[in-house]
Image 1: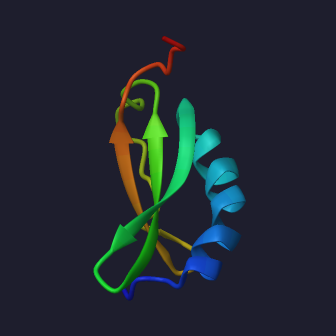
Image 2: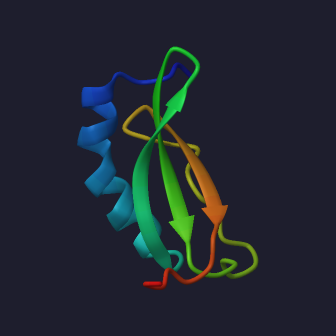
Length: 74
């Protein structure tokens, strides 16, 4: 899978929020730099339920998922 352009990654961001939001507690979706391009980083508030499969890409844009916990204002 190739890394995406910035425009493609931006376009896929809202779709990623919808897709991942149905499967887990999403606290944020952002863009991340990858070798020679961009991808999406999906931050989860908690460990997803066992057996949940996440897509490795959204609209051809690679996705990195990380459990970061709850986001709190400091």
